[in-house]
Length: 109
Length: 115
Image (cartoon, rainbow over all chains, first blue to last red; front, side):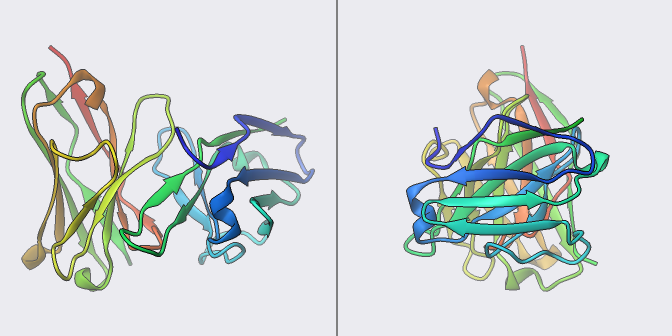
C-alpha cells in the first residue's frame, strides 16, 4: 500500500493537455518528484522539487502543487509521452524514507 | 556522463541467494547515496531503502529487513544488493538509483526465482 494515490489510468488526445495527479497528506510538507517509465525501460526523472525539469526533459512537462495534491501537466501531449508515470517524495527527517505512488498509465489517443 | 550499470539477469531456485551489482561512473561515488527500488512484474515501483556511500550505513524500508543487505565497494564505485533465502515473490526487476533526489537509474536487473 502507499500513502500517495494516483489514478490508475488517464488518456489524452494527441496534442491536447493532460494533468496527472498524486494525492497524499505528506505532500503538504514535501515536494513531489515525477518519473516516466516506458515499457521495458528504467524510469527517468522528469520533474523534481515540484516543478524543475532535469536537463533534456521537454518544457511541455510542468508541475504544480496545491494542498495535498501534486500534479504533472503535459501540454500538447505527444505519442512518445505514452508511458507510466510515478510520483514520489522523500521524507527529509529521520531515515529519509521514500514513498512512491501507485503509478498512472497514460495513453495518448 | 553519469552511468549506473547493473549486473545481468539471474535465475535462482527458492532458498538460494543472489547478489546484484551496480557499477557507477561519471561522478564522485561518495557524493551521492544509492537507493534500491523493486518492481515486480506488471506492478509499480517499491522503494527498498538506501545506503550512505560515505559511511556505508544502510537504511531498509519496511518489508526489506532481514534477507536484504546493501553493501559497497567504494574502490570500484560499486554498490551491491544481496538477497538471501529467495522466494518466488522476490521475482522482480531491481533498480539502483543515484542520490537522495533519485535522479539517475540503472537499467535494472531481473531476478527470477523459480524451481
